[in-house]
Length: 144
Image (cartoon, rainbow, N blue to C red; front, side, top):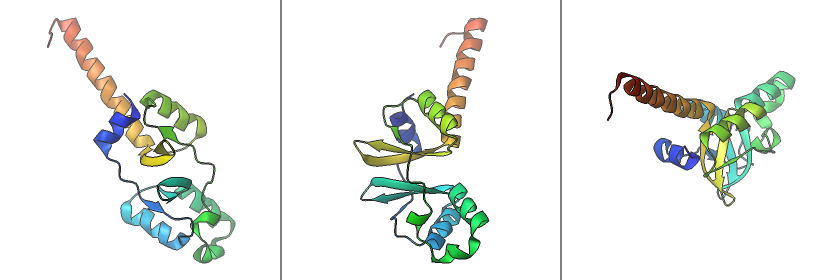
């Protein structure tokens, strides 16, 4: 399955903020939308990603500065991205290798969507369940 297919099922909505967005407001967005990251973007061009892990690291180092900070001061700047034509297997490998849970999807430099590790695992689970059903039917001699 291609990422394009997965996004067609999931949807293309992404919560984004500009780099100059106040960190406190970005944290509220995470809570409000019950999400683990926001993509930092200008005009659909990914500039970074702010994750719960980024915020937790800052809170462990210097929690007193959080209220005055901007997203660009905390965000991960070297963002790993995937392409619409990548496969779910490839994306799962990228996420595992890089130990990331959120992956922006881009096409020709423009953000198209985002996937979480849960989205990828669910897609794999559905594929395996379908294959198991076909195999059971084959073994039983039931053909659809």
